[in-house]
Amino acid sequence: MNTSMNKTKWTVSVALMAAVVVVLANTPLGMIQLPIIKATTVHIPVILGAMLLGPLAGAILGGVFGICSIISNTTAPTLLSFAFSPFMTMSGLSGVFKSLWVAFGCRVMLGVFAGFLWQFFKKVHHTGIAAMACTGFVSSVFHTLIVMLSIFKLFTLEYAAAKNVAVDAVWGLIMATITGSGIPEAIAAGVLVAALGKVLMRVVHNL
Image (cartoon, rainbow, N blue to C red; front, top):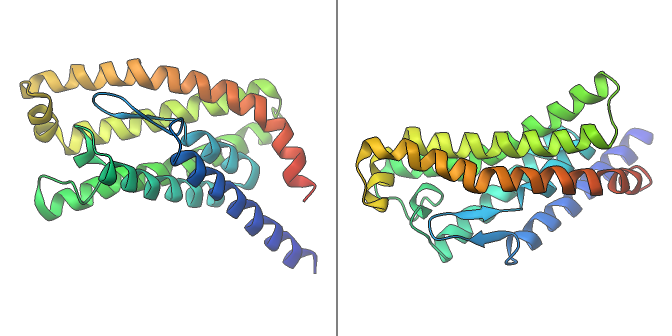
C-alpha cells in the first residue's frame, strides 16, 4: 500500500511541476525574447523538480521544457530558432535530429544532471541553503554550456550565416552568449532555487 501511495504521490508531484514548467514557458518571464536567442527561466522548475523528486522526474520535466522550447521557437522564431525547432531547420533531415538534440535532449540532460547533483549533496550530508543555491547555479551553467556548445558543434555554419559573420568568429559569439545570458541565468537560478527549495521540499514531502 505504501509503495502504491508513494508512486501516486510522485506522479502527482511530477505532474504539478510539469504544469509549472508549461505555465512559465508560456509567460513573458519564461522565454525572454532577446535579439539573437531566447533567455529562459523555465530551467528553474526543472532543477527544483529534479531535486525534490529525483533524476527521473528531472528528465521528464526537462523533456516538457524541451517540447515547450520547440513550440516557442516554431511559433515565435528568432535568428537561432533553427537550432531549437525541427520545423525551422535549414539543413534537412540531419538538421531535424540536431535541433531535437539541442531543444529536447539537452533539456532532458539538465534534469538528470540536477537530480544527480542534488543526490551527491545529500550523500555528503549537505542539504542546506548553500547546497541548494549551488545546485541551482551549477545546473544552470551546465544547461547553458551543453546547449551553446551543442549549437557550436552542430550548427556552426548555420550560426555564421544567421549572424552574417565568418565561421571563425562563431566561437567568440558563442562565448559572448554564455557569459552575457548564461551567467545571469545561473545567478537567478541559484537565488530562486535556494529561496524556493526549502519551502517546496516541505510541501512535497507532506503531500
